[in-house]
Amino acid sequence: MNRQGLTDSGIRADHLSMVASFLYLIGVTPEGIDPVPMLTGVSAILLWWTIESSRLLTVVPVAKEVIFHSISDGVIVLDNLGRLVEYNEGCRRMFPRLDESKYGHPLDAVWSLMFGTAESVPVLGEGPRELEADAGDRTFAITGCGFRR
Image 1: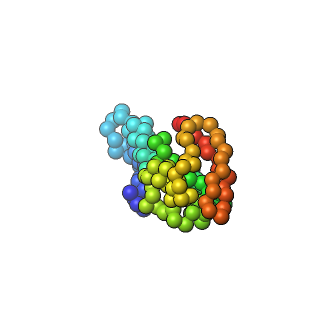
Image 2: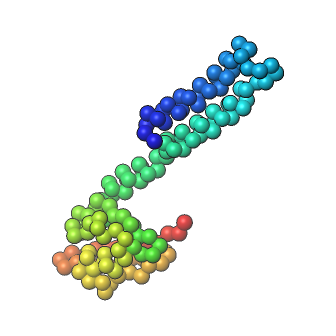
């Protein structure tokens, strides 16, 4: 849904209980029936849906993108099967042959592209590990860390 549609649904949700209250006060509703509590509940659900579908309260993806891509150290992210999920701008500068077409490739294929050999591919697992990798005229200090959700 576009931003205008979300704004419109938020405004409708906000006005729903006010209109019901006005109609009740002028006597348009059936005798003895107060629609305000029920329509306030509907309004709350509509507001919740508007906020949730717009991801209005979600700043984590934006912050993650800004921070992740501004780190000068190269960072690669692998999934739990050891496939490339993402890499940052620092990594792209260090390894120009690494591109988005390598997403989904296993670590050994990505490693051989980065370092020219798959011999020193680190073993994936939990816990931090430190190693060095040579890429011709450059040596990289690598820290690997596995996480679980």
